[in-house]
Length: 337
Image 1 (cartoon, rainbow, N blue to C red):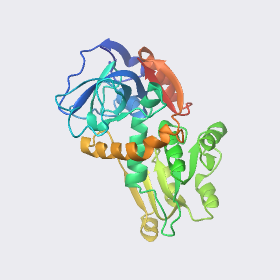
Image 2: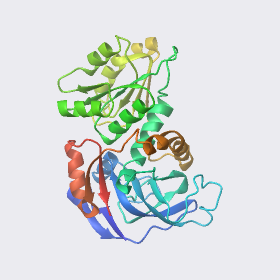
Image 3: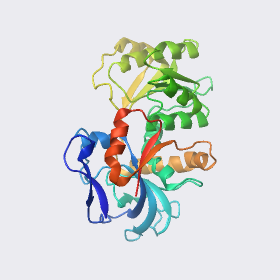
Image 4: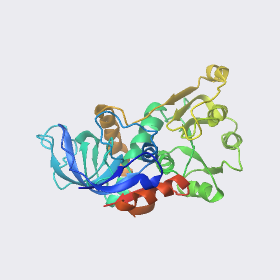
C-alpha cells in the first residue's frame, strides 16, 4: 500500500510518500480501505518529535480515517460487540492510534462508526478525532449540562475556528447551550458566530474575560475548553462562574501557569486536562456509543455540519501540514487517497 511516513523529525518536507505492507489485523480489529484521512495538530507535533507514538501503535501519522471495511479479524463482525451491524463493504469512519496516512488502516471495531447519512467520505474523515475529543472533555470530564436552577450552562471555546473549535461550537449549540469563542481575527470571530457562537471574540483586540463577564451579567461561564494553556489559564479562572470547570486539551501557549489557588477554593473551581490517544479501547468505545446515540442523529439531520477548509491529495501531505501551521484555516484539513 501507499503511505505517508515521517522520514525524520522536522519541517513538513520530511513527510514522504512510501510503500508499506498492509497492516496486519489484531483481535477485535477491522481493516479499512481508506478514502480520506483527517489532518490534526497532533500529527504536526508527532512530525516535529513532540508527540510520542504510544507502544504498539503505527509509526505512521494519522488519527482518523474514513473508507470501507474490507476485512475483519476472526469473528469480530459476527460477534456481539458489532453494535451497529457493520460488515465488509460498510462505509465507516474510525478513530485510530496512528497509521491513518495510508491506503489501508486497521482500527478496533469499538472505535469504528458508520458514516452518518448524507455525508461524504471527506466529511466523515473529519469527524472522529475532534468529536471524540470534544465529547470526552466538554461533556464527560467538564460535565457541560445544566445549572442548579435548571438552565443550560455556558461554554467558552478557545480557538473557535480550529477543527476542535468548530466541532465544540456546533455540538454545544445543537444541544442548547450558549457558546462564546475566541479567534485571531475579525473574520474568524465572525466565522465562529456563523457556526452558532453567540459571540466571537477577537483575542488580539478584545479581552475575553471582560467580554464573557459582560455577556453573562458578571456571572462568568461554566466551562472553558482550553487549547492554549500558559498565561491563558489564570485569565480563564477569572472568567469562570462559581463551580466552573476548565478542560485543557493542548498547550499551544506553554505548559507553565501561575494560578490563584484561593480563587479555586472560594469559587469551587475545577481545572482538568487529558489526552485521548493513549486511552484504552474500552474508554474510547464508551465515547463512540455516546456519539452514535446522541450526535450522529444531529449530523444526519444537518443540525451539525462538518466544516472542510481544504483537501489535498495524500502525496501532498507536506502542503497540508504547512497550511495547518499557518493557522489560517477555518475547520478541517483532509487528505484524499
